[in-house]
Amino acid sequence: MGKKEKVEALVEGGKASAAPPLGPALGPLKVNIGAVIAEINKKTEAFKGMKVPVKIIVDSDTKDFTIDVGTPPTSQLIKKEINAEKGSGTPNKLKVGNIGIEQAIKVAKMKESSSLANNITNNIKEVIGCANSLGVLVESKTSAELTREINDGKFDKIINAGLTDVSKEKLDQLAKDLVKVNEEIKKKEEKLKAMEAEFEKEVAATTVAKAPAAAEGEAAKAEAGKKVEGAKEAAAPATPGKEAKVAEKKAPEKKK
Image 1 (cartoon, rainbow, N blue to C red):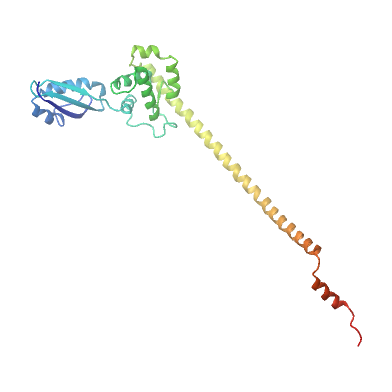
Image 2 (image 1 turned 120 degrees about the vertical axis):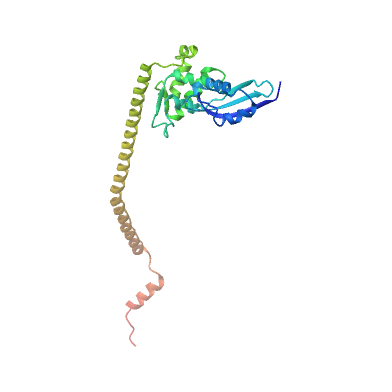
């Protein structure tokens, strides 16, 4: 066996060609480039429209080769299912997609080799969680709602059968459900904003109403303070010096 030569590249799923970067990298290895390209396209067919990492390992003596295909991030696979370039910027307020459990199974299978989950069911739950963070519903439900149903065994039959195709009728219903969910979210947001506005209005009105009363209260306090001070002065005993002076002033002068 000869030395193992490796070529790594990022190619578009199902559309690899002898053009750069693959052609120039494979040429010096004297391998059958056409056969390599055909194998890559076969293995990446499921990733059409996405960039996929591939690794070509060539035996320098026999020119035999093996191809390892990586997978795009789960988020990219989900976005491909809903034909969107990006997820929702506010996933709690705006849902951008709604996929069936079959599509979640499809993505889970694609990521099975790189997932840390110990079975397909847990792998599906990872996909559902990722979908939730993108603002994508699965079966018209959030990840928390659907995970409970999966745990209850509602989708065991579909999962065990490994179904990945969704009927047109179901896709149409999922689309209608998406519109309905977004309308409900919008109504809740509008109701909340109206409640906040009403609360702020009540606070402002209360503040204005209290202002005159507060001013009157301060004036009354000041007036009461003056009366108390006056009463204190009236009740206070006169000083001895002052009394003597008053008496001296009032006493009649003696005749000389």
